[in-house]
Each structure stands twice: as structure tokens, then as C-alpha cells.
Length: 435
Ligand SMILES: Cc1cc2nc3c(=O)[nH]c(=O)nc-3n(C[C@H](O)[C@H](O)[C@H](O)COP(=O)(O)O)c2cc1C
Ligand code: SF4
Image: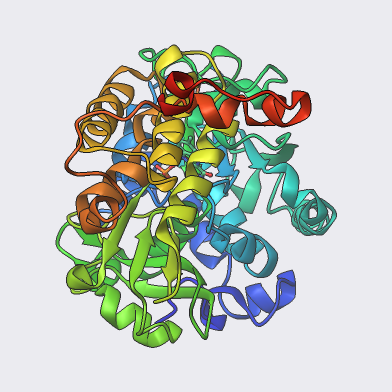
């Protein structure tokens, strides 16, 4: 299953001649010469294409929100790909850049933008020369620049802007700030980017894969696209599969595929757990492996991490919480401080000092952090603990003192142990009993 990644979709290589020989850019020429911008939007809307960056907002609808008018507007492509375990956009950028650039030109036409910005994560800086070379070739062939494909009045070019290595810059408003050269912090919304985006102008932000799918829809039609997937999740999804499996890599599958089926493809059938959607997603146990990938069940921007039978899930959860503590931009207290407190609670439990009360507090604090945070990072950051607490509660129960209501985290004897050893002093009985 590889509708986006098949040679038919892209030519055998990233070279323009190969792509054109297989019908590449023909759909852009047809759309530009035969369809109005509104008709392009309608076809993508009819295909029920939902954003592939994670949230699943319908692409054609988003494009329709851009206000009519002559003023400047922008298309931003989100190639930040910072969610741990996600690397499918890197493969598309490396091997299928023409599919993306064709999708960008079509989306630019659909929203009336003359400038597209490809926001590339800092770690993918090595791809920039390769992509610039492809863009230069497109300019020479008049696929970028003025009067594209002979369409009078349609000018479109693409600029690549590099991030600086922050996960939060994948959030669309932080991405726009960063692309403008500002500190990459999320904005308050409303106004949304479609009203007030890059340089204060109407802007749509789309994931790399979303625009590739749009190019395929305009080539093959909305009905062809809807033949894949499920009623609420049309088409295919490109997944990055990593972890404890024999065949990690990038898989393109129809929405509706079960986790069991995916594990069979990736050689991970003995998994004890699967993390769907990266750390901000959900961790599911074997008993739920018949659940399906799709917006109606297990939504994912593309990250699937397999955990084998010997994997210590506490270590995994701790690692994910480290990630969120590190990546919080610090603007709001629930996210900046709350995640550190959650991680401390987790450590207390991992050290065998937790009680049921700690579990209750984790749940209450996690809910508060999600509800009170300003952007999607904080709104999902407690998920590693909350979803494992929900789906692997027995693991937590085995570590805690279920019979005790409260055990302080502070152990006086342990805390002064080094000093006592150095000075040769002895603790009084009352102090040594205090734990
Ligand atoms: C912390 C955070 C990181 C994100 N990272 C990405 C990312 O790397 N790529 C992406 O496409 N969307 C990412 N998103 C979602 C974007 O904000 C946005 O919804 C998406 O780019 C819209 O494109 P789509 O509609 O085509 O999915 C992230 C969101 C948050 C809150
Ligand atoms: S939720 Fe976290 S990352 Fe988002 S704005 Fe608040 S502090 Fe920054």
C-alpha cells in the first residue's frame, strides 16, 4: 500500500525529468488551466482530506477560511517533524520533493498565495541544499516564478526557512513566529493564522504529507482518494514505525488498519505495548491491539513506537516526561512547572515510595495541566503518565504501597547520609526513625 510513496506518484527518483515522465505536474497544469481556485478547494474538500500533522482538520475547509481579496497571503509547510518517533516527512522530502512542491503550488493557487514557506526543522538542515537544487530546477522550467504553467496572474515561489531545534515550533503559531525570525512561542488564538498569520497576513499551515495527498487528489480525483480508508478518515497514512520490531521504517497504510496488522507488517507481533502518536499520543496494551489507526479511534501524526516484552515502561514514560520538561517554552506555569512536578511524582513511584494518593494526585494534576495550558504541547504533555496509568495500572499498583495513605518524598536519613559519614557523627534515634 503506497499511494503517496509509489514510484507512480513520484517518478523513480527525485529528478524532475523522471517525475514529469510519469505524469508529474500534469495535474498542476490541468488544475491551473481548467479549474478555478474555488474548484480546487472543493475537490480537496470533497475528498475529505484531513490534515496529516495530527489534529486532522479538513484541508479544503481550512483553505476556504482564507479571506477573499487581493492582499498578500502565505502558505506555510510544516516540516518541523519534532514528535519523537516521527521521520516520515524526512523520507518524503528526500525521495518525493516534487510531490510536495506540486501540492504546494496547488494549495498556493487555491488560497491565492504567491509565496510558500517550507519550514524545515534544524536537524534537517542537511536536506536544504538538495531541496534548493530541486527548486532551482523548477524555476528554470517555469514551474515556479511568474505565470506558472502559462496561467496569467499566478505567481508562486517557495522559500526554505530553518528552525532552530525546538519541538514547540511545530505548533503552527510558534512556527510562524519562528519563520518571522522571532522567538518560537505559540500565539494566543483567536485570531487564527488564516486571519492573522505570517507577517500578520492570512496564512495556512499544512503538514508535508497533507500537501502530497492534495496533489494526488487533484491528479486522480476525490472519489479515488475516498476509496481508501474509512468514512471518517479517508485515504492513506504514512507512518514512521520504530522501536522493538524487526522491520522499522516508513509504511504507507490505509486508515482503518489495526495495530495487530501493522505489527505483523513491521515484525513486532510480540509487543507488550505500542505508543501511537508519539509521547503526546497514547500508549496501548496488547488487549487493545485490535484498535484501528484513524481519527475516529487512534489518531496519529505518524509516530508509532513498538515496545517489546522486556521493555521497562516506567523508563519510557520518564524519558517522555524529560522531553516535555525540556521542550516546554515556559510561557505558562501549568506546563512549565506542572510537568516537572509530575515527573517528580513518577520518580517517587519508580523508587517504590508512592501511594494511592500519589496516583490520585497525578491524575488530578495531569487533568489540570491539560486544561490550563495555552498550546497543544502542554495540553498533551501529561499523556505519557496518564495513558499508562489508565492502560497499565497494574504496573503502577505493583510499585506503590497500596496500604499506606502517605509517604513523604523526603528521607532525612538518606539526605544527611553523606554528611554523617564525613563527620563521623551518629544520628539520634528519633532522627534516624524519621523517614
Ligand atoms: C507542540 C506541537 C508540535 C507540533 N508539531 C508538528 C509537526 O512537527 N508537524 C506538523 O505538521 N504539525 C505539527 N503540529 C500541529 C500543527 O500545529 C498544525 O496543526 C499542523 O501543522 C496543521 O497541518 P495539517 O492541517 O496539514 O495537519 C504540532 C502541534 C503542537 C502543539
Ligand atoms: S503550553 Fe507549554 S509550550 Fe505551550 S505556551 Fe504554555 S509553556 Fe509554552
